[in-house]
Length: 158
Image 1 (cartoon, rainbow, N blue to C red):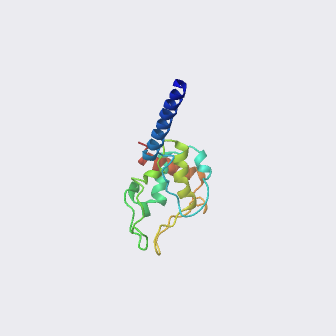
Image 2: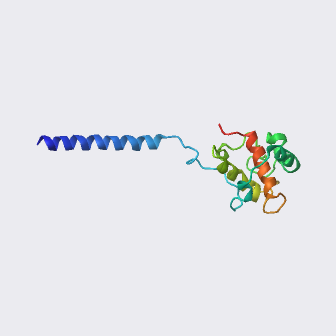
Image 3: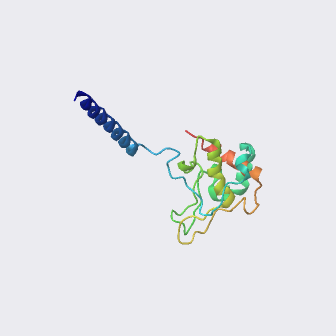
């Protein structure tokens, strides 16, 4: 009889332990791997740039030549974008936190998808949309890698 009592006690403790783990999982804050990451409206996978090493200094020049007119100097202020839901082009500094990752390849991929394929902002009829710099061959993979390095330097992982 005592042996049966020990089994019940052990089973009860085990059940409480499993319940506590389940409750902790339900109340845990999302991490990089569970948070919903922003994605461009246009489909497509990562390009060759994510496998290259970018140069942030060269990327700054490429950004100035191709991105400043919509995202502002150092990406700090987006210009007005009539017809879009929020009325402006998103700033790059600070960038949407869901794009930032401590894993450099993941971070590069998150940025690359927008640069490669472009994106149309939400809204009835946005006046401005992000160009598909990779798909249109406006920028070569190394240039995209350089822009990724520059944008990443403006928004380092915390």
